Length: 371
Image (cartoon, rainbow, N blue to C red; front, top):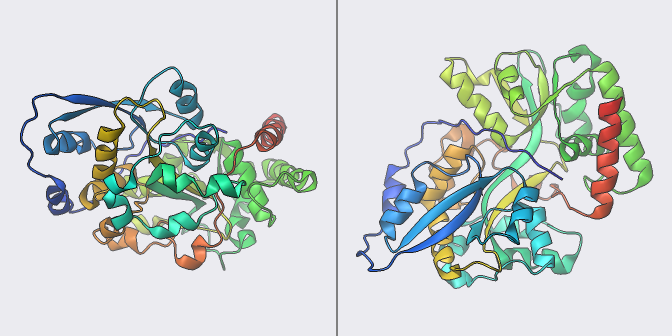
């Protein structure tokens, strides 16, 4: 599975200087400098976060390299040494299974326990309970997001409920032919079809998968969706597309594009269905890290409220940091599609990764694209 990343162009006006300043601690110059290597998604940390960390901890320097998929991250781990990485939930579970993560001293990362949303630990992150129970012992939540319906409020009525059939209905409605956006991504698109039909996002049942495939083919014939990733955002802003499937970060990026263009942000809205995908990107330390102690210091810094707020603001994805959330503008903080309620959390599914899932879903997507 490859989950592509949008180019996060988020410039929501936030007042973060006070919180960020509170994070910085005056430190005397150390005689020796240690460089830690940070492997991160592109455009996934505020421009000045690393500089702030180095100012607070002059004994540690950070060198960052970026990747564009969990698979690219995975393939690099054995041949390169990184101190901090940012794998998504299912990749953390895989790395735990394979013994490729260092188990940090969580007492050295107190900001995680102090500020991060404890509800995240209730999510089932792997089909094996023994593995799922270990994920939060090895990794710390960094940012999270959801998969939902983005729609133009002038063209598409708000869903009547959060049932999958109501939320996803516009994506399969011939009335919006040639004005529907779908991610060119097997897990997101097959996942929407499964959710629409009331099935698990991780189903390997042949009959259920056949039904999802038929629904996507029918959609292609009648609704004639536009497939893409980053290019879809401008089409929502220009009203070329009436509705589509979107990551919550893409929705925030669209809000900022509307703001930049001097348009009404109420032009678009975002809705979640019961049982939709929820994903977490974690901060973790590889087993072969050369500087795990310094890595823990860096991770703790990223979990401080001011820094977490700034990074969330920049990336467009939701921060798990409860203190940082208090400083968000109401338009974001009160949007339950970005910061879900307890009841919504109970319905979410995290994508699992297995040979059966990967092979079956890939075959479905190839058939849909070839239709």
